[in-house]
Length: 415
Image 1: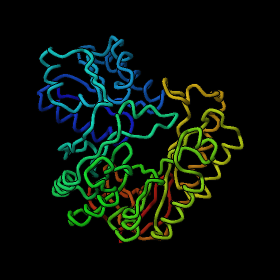
Image 2: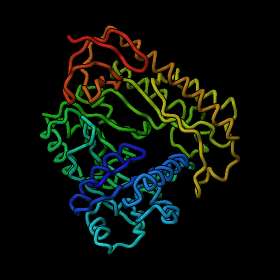
Image 3: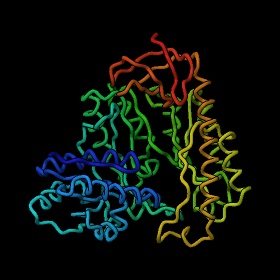
Image 4: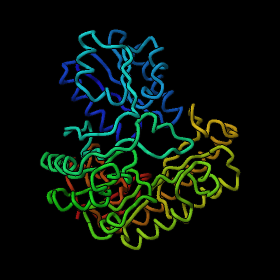
């Protein structure tokens, strides 16, 4: 049996899971499952432990390696599980040697080094993304910010960027492999370049990619921090049609006091202003956002500010996180909101998101869209609206006339 990799969490984890698969195959590891965990919420970590137990019950003989952010931040928790054979840190999980040592029975059960000591990151030669028609390309890792709710810097380390030349070469290779769309990913990609010679920005990288990889049909950004968006990136948004007009924002709250207690660097007005500026530059732009429900000290009035931000900023979809205290973070020591209230507020945010998303899809009726088709008869427009259309070959860009909406998907006919 070959190595199976199970992924929790973000696009960066999905990208790294393919690097894990390559490293394990290079080490000729067999009959093993690697669980690539997420630590962004307590629920994500709980689900990973639940999955590990289920895997072992299903196949007691198969060995289990646990890695990822939760393994990096709380290795002893996973090492204490009888179902776990080894725990690897976020740096170790990407090396073939770690899997070769494990396969040979020469590995330490816990191999998790100090992630804060890392000063560099490198592109990984990943050209296969299981079940995907778009390619992820890591340009950055780690985070220098210390939001009061977030444990991710302790799982990923400080911000470090992949050199621009390596990113361009990897983008060319992925384009040559036939991927119609490349997604730039990282932990905090708008901080790109600050640690590199000359301090290039994300906007500079985007402009270079579009110029030097002319065969790349689509370039998309993963989650961005709007307060860090630079002049070159704004220029690319306005002028470069191959840069997709969907922007997922790390917003977290629509209330200024809560944003200060989160130690975020933007205000409510900053989010609204960014969306307005981008919309003026790119009329087809769409915005989604991360939002936390029930942050400590959040009153009903503060929560209402988050709800109303959806309309004021014109957000089309939310990724909602019910607040969960992470050990060692300042927010865990703040006055907590009752769990029932958090759950209720998260449900209201999700309902708001569903209504906003429906409006966004309805507004696209009658438009013509170039849709990247994926497996299962689903594709995505440039603004990342989902389109249901059967019979198209996955990985092709298909011009479609949008005819309406069926639930969370647009319907269409060929042009």
